[in-house]
Length: 99
Image (cartoon, rainbow, N blue to C red; front, side, top):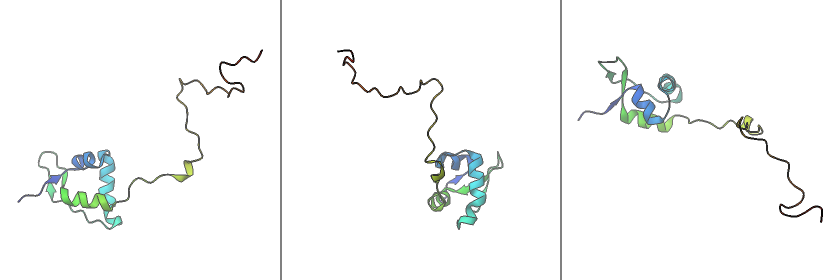
């Protein structure tokens, strides 16, 4: 039985990132305790090929995208075409202030 082999482009589609991100991820895998060895090369493109089951296992062990807590107090920018929020009204809409 032949195992399925994935190129960096295939891995990028699997994890939802760009191929350049995957190449860095593959280089750093060892520092996270994940051993990923290429099982061959694509004869057409020359890209390294990795066993799909190894990539799936490694994806579970690699750290995900962290949430930056230093940006939580920053207000989100408004779209340039969105008018600023008006100040709150002191009287309810529909009531007459002159009555």
